[in-house]
Length: 233
Image 1 (cartoon, rainbow, N blue to C red):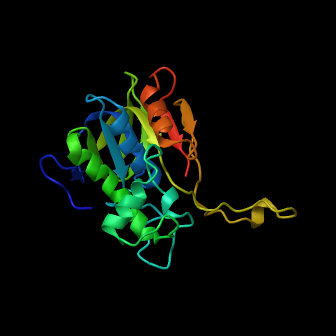
Image 2 (image 1 turned 90 degrees about the vertical axis):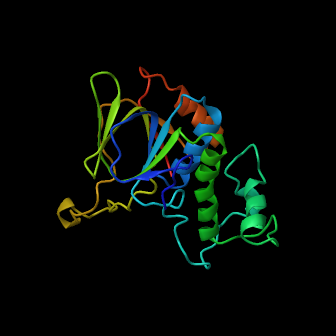
């Protein structure tokens, strides 16, 4: 995603260390829409950073395709990112994709990816230019430092500090099934590690919860109660 100057959302490859209210690791559907909702439901002092290794907000695996043959499996009328504005996506599609889009249309996934990509930009450009930063990098480690803040180490060597961290990691790779009669020696040993261990307390937010609820839940987490929240894809 190209960077923006001045009042626009910026993309940094090696940002200076800075503290944020919330750091969102993963900029696919859950990470991007949660960040947009947090901006809508918090005050001017609330800051957010999204850490995503690709430069395209909202795409992720589900909506990063460029093929028009890959269609959404839900009709346009039910694909709004905002539960309080159920026709938001339908209006956007008519204005930005095809003016003949109907409520029952099943649009290409790439179109929905474009829609998601506009959410953060539109929100930031409206009146919140200083509250969001998008970092094109990869989180490599998370640790809790002495003063209760959370430190995120990035692949580039930079670090980010945050009061709370949301893990919007998408779908994990498939695991090898433990089938009856199959011993451990016959199973492959090079499968990716699906989970990680952490001593930081965690809160789980399911993707089926309405995003305004999830945003308010993350924003209201007290430092003593939770420091990590997972948004399940």
